[in-house]
Length: 255
Image (cartoon, rainbow, N blue to C red):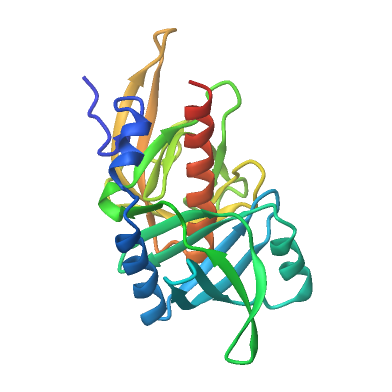
């Protein structure tokens, strides 16, 4: 029997229950998390819905009295206009290896210490996922998402095309269609390009953590690799998290 991948696979647990386990609803806890971001001056990504634009900002103040959070304004009138258009955004930040995210609704302009700023309401809920708690979501087989891996040597100019089986904020499982990558645990695959739909490619280093030979319905065997991300840049981590959360939301809405 092939070894299993060490991941939170939503095929084996209910995604609603999983997200609920790490969703904060207590206003006191939510305010505590937001104030920690403010105190530590953590950079925050506002991932604009329906757009490839990401606004990099920070929490300037948390006002419990009027239920608002003050953010630094976007660098550029066009980005501020998109935020104020009411399409919404995803608030994503990393604090000591913990991912903090929530949906942002109405955004308004304000002043903070005589400088332009943005005001959003304190969220009613907030997802807080530690790295070890990152789950994986399965990807469609009929229309596979590709990951292009640079060839292991300079002899071949063409990248190796693999298909993603599932994806999470911590790593991926991929199918090595032509068995061109090998199965050596701990091997690094730099410069991999994850061609996710509706967003720019994620470029990262993958580390092979485990492998398995999967028997297909036609009797043939296929190599599957479990990989983790290595030093994934914050902006790409934010895009990846939004992609994963959108897939899970779509799955839940279809139930």
